[in-house]
Picture 1 (cartoon, rainbow, N blue to C red):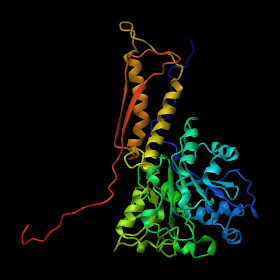
Picture 2 (cartoon, rainbow, N blue to C red; picture 1 turned 90 degrees about the vertical axis):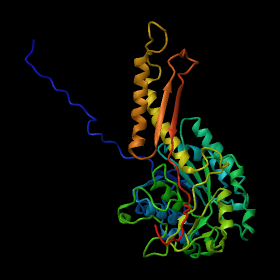
Picture 3 (cartoon, rainbow, N blue to C red; picture 1 turned 135 degrees about the horizontal axis):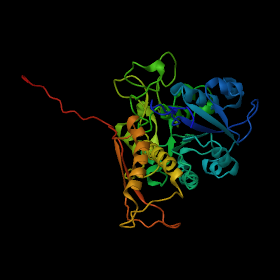
Picture 4 (cartoon, rainbow, N blue to C red; picture 1 turned 180 degrees about the horizontal axis):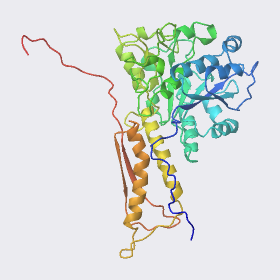
Length: 410
């Protein structure tokens, strides 16, 4: 017998610390020339700040020389989400979104960024009149990745404007008539950017959309006037607009065909939102420019009609999958009396699932959840264990309606 006496083992996890969230790791796929850069087509580059892009040769001069807005979109991403991570995938020029996502080289590049949650696709050849034909092939790309257990929250397409403005607004293609719940189209345009060069007059913002999504929690709407966790330079403000004080960024807004927001009637604005477009505008009498909403290209009745619905579901799915994987092909104890799954085993699985989803409660991302595992299940190679789960998502207030009157006494 030895003289160890007392043995003390070091435990870990009692402080409740967690690794940094990966919710703000995004991808920008840019159809672009590579002249003057050190980029290689379909080889991604991780960017932690704007200077990383500049070191690769993607700077203001590159945009000006090549008549593209790649640097501008990167800069806008980090303007709105300074703590985000952006993976740049340079792609061949003169591609439609559907042609891009069909390329094996592009799929491989996306696979090599397993932590990337949202993809922005910019500078393709497709304009708004034809964008509705592109969203379902892009959804197929998302679905194929889902079959590999890779969950992409959203793909943001640049809806470039046509030479002539679409009139009336009701003639915009109806994206809500499509079946692409993980795809969204931006037709938002910053006039200060569009006016820099004639080549930019029909561009639609993608970097701003990505940045404003990345800075938000997964349950927040892209169009929210304020956000839960503002960057340090904006703390103390009661809102988080696209407009940047001291610069010309988003002093106003227009559609990608150059149609100013001020010319849109309330009916026009509602029509664009109802048709599933992301655009930017202002509240009368309130300073700043904001996005209208976060619609996806599926009917409004669908559970995944807004980007935040997909982000919440996907995050929960990743947590659940990573929680249950260690138990795959593990032993399942049975109750000797009934022959069904032992109650202690059910309790252990439930405890693990609850612990995983409690992190989303703690982070103020969902309102609640529930899991149920029926013990009366026969398990076999072709009979998976069935778990029923529900997530109580937060509501979004889109408008307030106040009844206000005058009175002589209260």
